[in-house]
Amino acid sequence: MNSFGLGLLILIWRIFRSIEGAAGDKCPPPPTVEFAKSFAKSYKVGTIVKYECVEGYKRKSGEARNIQCRLNEKGFAQWTTAACTVDPTLRLPPEPEQLTRTEDGSGSLDSPPTTLQPHRKDFCGVIKVPKHSRALWANYTVGQQLQYQCMDGYQARPPISKMSTCQYSGGTIVWSKLSPWCTNDTTSFVEDTTSVKEVITPERGTSNVSDLKDVGSRPSYDTSFATASAVFAIAVASTVVI
Image 1 (cartoon, helix red, strand yellow):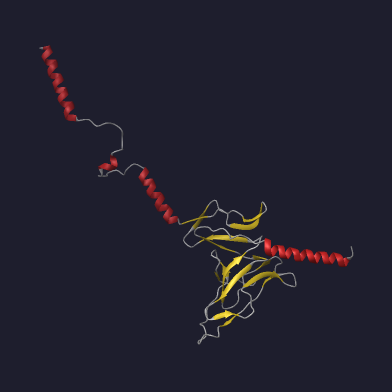
Image 2: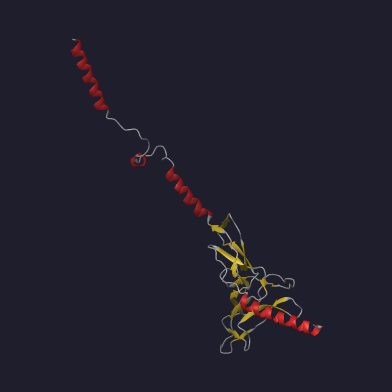
């Protein structure tokens, strides 16, 4: 086989792999953790992010409804571009707004943008949605990693596995298991303390008789009946002696 034929086969193989990756490497929805949010530091090539223009702006004619992480002509991963323009049907221009662009666990992108990241061949950096827009959700591809963090007011308890990876398992695409447990320490402490107080013996000096019914197992005796019985026995003994 000559070099031309070999090059043609390589080109066909790359095209086939790109089509296969676009269609068959999509991840299912990522796992959710109660009282926790997920985020990504980088995004695998093939990730698709749906966006919408904010109020007062509209998608520029001919622009796609999403942006994608793709390889550029130099072989590095980068986000495709799009644009939102002022809606001409509005009488007044929209108010300027502060946009945010990083993803949280709900699929919205509302964390501040980070500093410029170096070029990589397999992953894009911070999601770059168009100006005057917000991201709605993302479709991930195999190899994507998500990190989980407890929300404010909650803390993680062991065992902890804070990262989930989209991967192949038994011929299917799944997210790896994670075991974070986010809890409110103050609430848990109050509940535990209450249950302990119900188990231990009642505090000394209590005046509530119902609290003491089960304390001890010895039966009670009527002391007046015992005294009368003793007097009668002494009287009988004295009569016999006389």
